[in-house]
Image (cartoon, rainbow, N blue to C red):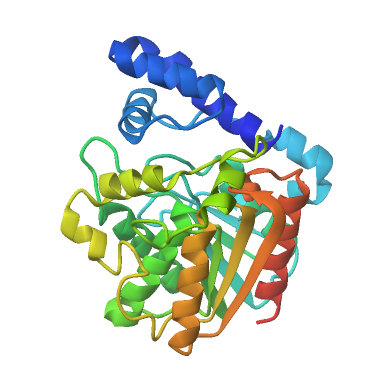
Length: 330
């Protein structure tokens, strides 16, 4: 199933579970967009999450993963008492020098440790000799707002520093998880704890509003039937929801593009060509370089947002290979 089809199945899954509990105008908006594979307006999307409880599982099962990648079955998976929900993925054999603390995405309001963007990444890297601690966090639902998710990632990172014997401990995340990882890195830089050896950021967003897009390029993504489209208005509205207070939109820990980039750890930035969020990642990469930070930037050709949630896709596997190569260099 491609990204757009999977997005449509996910949104339609929400709609089936919650339509009867939504006001009539919201029902029409949700159902119309869900059948087209589009994201509903942010207030409806958030309400769906609050009613449904979480994203429906649309990724491959362990059986499907192990059939395609038999080496994953040997990985040891546990759930440590890390202060937040977490899964620890350990290689069956000898580990390398690097361990990754990894944070999934979900627009700050969804996602879990079962989703492929978390579970497959943990399994696949551990099968390659790189232990992974995957973290979950409180979502911006039912009145929860920043800094709850950031606090949870900081808690998980602190546990990893104290409990995982790693020569090089890295911090990373995808999409909203990339935002959280980068924001926590700024908190660590400012005295909250030891800095990671590097940041590993996949299709992340760092701005409360997307940097300006060329209208033609933006329309090409919007009209691409094979990718998920996050409109600039949708990103702006979700940022405001996550922040909860207009002043937080300027907070450097909530939106890391704010403020000084100096002191950020070496960073690998993995963007998707057909993803509106890449304008944020590209601008922040420029800020990092201007501040003297080492940045490796890659763009997966033709890929849509969320490709690490597609273990059987060329883009998902290519991005995982890039993460592996980066972590093995340490």
